[in-house]
Length: 231
Image (cartoon, rainbow, N blue to C red):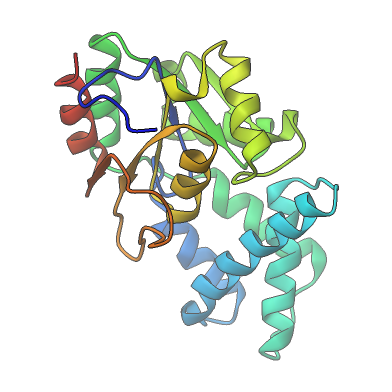
């Protein structure tokens, strides 16, 4: 389905980690846990995503932080780095929970709210995890609702997870737009019948085999400017 140009989505759904929150500090902490091997960070993050999908595809559910800790141990073991389960969990929980928002985020969210948009966070992190992240980053007050895949028991990018989110907000899939800095998340949303905006944060790319993304730009302020121009 081709969307009408410049028609406002009814609900804007925001991915959280990397899209809204700056992961620079987290990468440093995880790098330290891996004996200074910051080059292993992208491998760890990819492995964490892989095993969140494995968990969902197998009909199981584990908190994202627990999957992050388990995969941190796996990556460490493959590189002869010793890290205990307790240390891995503490590293991931502490690293994920104290992250600041990207510099442009609060201004962009304010502008979208002032222009009548409904803002909903939609994350693979647990309810408790995102609550603490938002309290730490000062983002709680910007959102009309905060959704976690914990309540559906299946991680993004499963189609059922996006459909659950649109149903929860009582809107049709075509009235939803996901704003995310991950090609896999944007692809999953569009395959579920949503619209999408991609923020090309450093190191992030769109998936070339996914449908064409409606908005592609470099930060949330630019996404906000485009959405505010919609009728």
